[in-house]
Image (cartoon, rainbow, N blue to C red):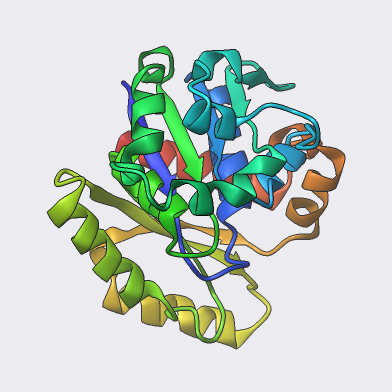
Amino acid sequence: MNKIIAIANQKGGVGKTTTAINLSASLALKNWRTLIVDFDPQGMATIGLGKTKEKQKGIYQALMNGTYMMDLILPTELDNLYICPCSPELSGFEAEIFSEEKREKKLQDSINNIKKYFNFIFIDCPPSLSFLTINALTAADSVLIPVQCEFFCMEGIADLFRTLDEVRTYLNPTLTIEGIVLTMFDERTNLSKQVAEEIRQSLRKIIYEVIIPRTVKLAEAPSFGKPILLYDIKSKGAQSYLNLAREILNK
């Protein structure tokens, strides 16, 4: 199996990076060779796995300097889990490629050279529908969309769906929706339960059964540079991401 999945939602704070790190770690624990491409200039996936984005080569060098991507990939504390980090230069990527031809396919060209070495490649996208996100969607086989169980949770989803249609039309006709995962669920509040139910009713066919809870452990783990599985594997957050990995594999 070789699958490239973009994790995207232009709304910030919905759990994209948390999902990228912990879903990837869950698949790695199941002996699937998994790579995270940190494609967000904020570099939170890089930091969340105990790496630094300062004074370090990363995905930018593959896109702009032609560096072989395998030479940029770093191991993590977890066997089978790797990251292609973000470096500070990525923040200027969009301005630099604005006038270039085939600028939407920069990431695709780099990933195609290394995808045979991994079972899963997850692209952690920035919270915007920018050239970075378009590059990720062009390179991906499918897109996974985290949606938080909060008011205005559907904000931007329609825009993302329209972007997916445009990407299919002009750049990547085989792009599919991997699924929508509900995140930041607070079982103590009626609002979370109501929102989750409303989303299920409107988007039932593409929503995963697993819901990711809002927990202190999930919030703490990145500050220690670890996925939740290494920080506290018995926590609700860890078990939820293990179950999500299982659901994706079964699907």
